[in-house]
Image 1 (spheres, helix red, strand yellow):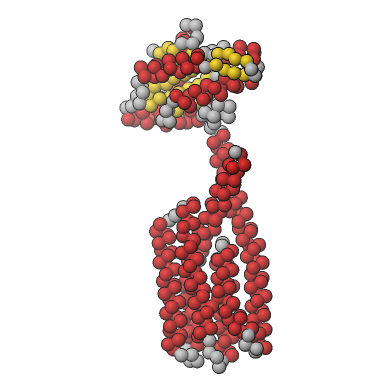
Image 2 (spheres, helix red, strand yellow):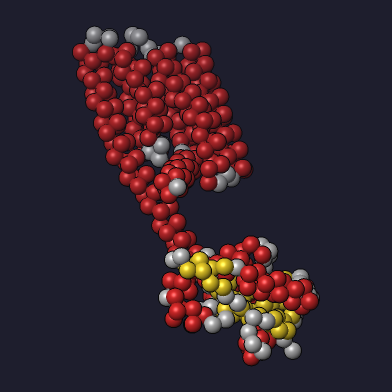
Length: 374
């Protein structure tokens, strides 16, 4: 069971980290759309005197269409503002539009490359190297997208130069291959560092949340502790005062708890407390605020509840506890509890004080009783 929980936790963290990477990708790569179009316009201007204008304009136009598609995707993403794992649904359209744009550069540059001008071919290759270098920094949040982008932009021209047989171009192509291999290594190191950074951030957040939760939960019973009872209780009592709603309180104390500890040991006392916690969890509503507020003392705040209803509930709890058999190390014994009940549209401190006085009257009357506050 714990193994399953650990697997679920690892899966959840993995999803959160992947979402963070994609969010960063959308955030930092938006300017790349305009950089790509500026470089394309500049390259078109350089090739204008030596290449067919229709070919250049066709390539530039297709690249413009992919840029518009990416721009619309970014606008839709920012309008939707997805969070957590919802971000992952935006990964596929991002990958598709980015790959189309990258292939338009990589394959398209072969189509616009002047076959009779080595200088302009070298210029085109220079642009492709620059675009690939920029992709490493812009898309570094997602290693696979970085590698696909660099490969789509750079490899078509690199392969063309390798098979051209021209010594200069073969040398440039070999340099590009070395660059691509270095990119694989660099993105692995960078991606791992970024992954660990996101992972540690979420692990720290989860640790803080768990610590904060444990600071408000009684470890033995799983109920709220005294701190949480008063924090939630103050909010609840303030709301009831503002809306003029009834708010009842039950204070309960286990009878002769010290005697149980002395006779059976503190572990037996812990068993009793856990059983009481289970009973309260089964009998009380989700809207109620209840907690272990002392050693063997439990408090219950019941919104929208009359004092008569609270008295009925306290009596039901008293009977259930009295009828419950506690089993500890093959020993069986029963326990009882004393209750104090009050109802008022006042602050939580007043409610606790009134319920406490009623509970002690229950103790004085012989214990295992329910008394109403004055």
